[in-house]
Length: 391
Image (tube, rainbow, N blue to C red; front, side, top):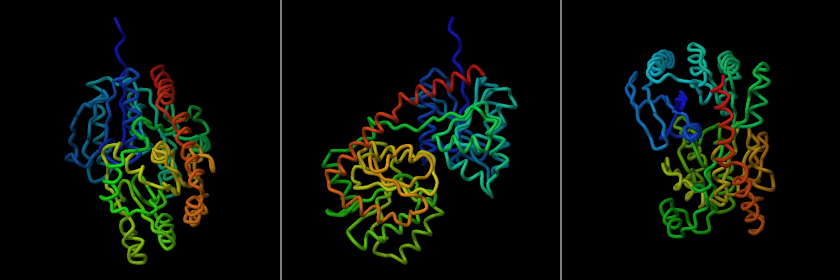
């Protein structure tokens, strides 16, 4: 008689169709764990369900997803969520708990696991550590979460070092880098599709297309993107293609930019959320360069996806980005302290011979395919889950 399948409680604040890299990485990770023989119950918070309510759904990846309605503040939401987790545990008898992002998911995962003597791990994504370790972040909760998890995973060696400094007693800090589906993220060669997209987004022949992929906000370098765009537009026809959305609280900054630089502001196109990854890949295929001037970051999926699509990326050296891009070989890095020179970097790359840029882009594709693929992630995840199951 075969042993029963272990059962994982997977907590995350955002889960598809929610936007953002955390949501996308959560889905990919949870689905990969299900593929390793675990029953995975995802609990994600949402405002699309009445406060305190819950809807449960299953998907093609073998996941059971419970979406819990948020209250108006985290105090009520966390207390109610703890009750929900208790009820789910009585129904499904969890073997272990995974918190994806350190707060709120990681904190609640560790708290619930400690209350019920379950093995637990938390996944640090970058922005969670960077925000919480400085005032007004909740350093004590960050420290408690990291210290009391049985195992900590993180997306980069840079983040691993930070955690080791913050919590020297936490010996189990493993790097679990993001990966990219290179079957989906590859350069689109369908000329009719690309022409249709150019028409939809009013991209004229001869315009330089500067791409940004994801949710545009301060963390991702919004002020530097706008300054660079104004500078570049004063020298050549250019367009900023935002493949995704602008975070609502940042839209006022766009409005101010439009007052100060109306002509450059007219060159910004925001696609809105593209649900299908193939649509994102097609949009990336329009870009001459992809810009990622992050002020701080983990290991952005958007950089991996752009490189897999054969895009040349100019990014900051924040977080784990230097672990993806080798400057001058597979892309270009601008020091975080010099992001005001982003336009100069763009102009220098555009001035390079076409053949040289094509060779760089080809090396970027090869690098992503060889280093950031699903087989690598599957092996590392297998090791993590084996440790959890034996805890």
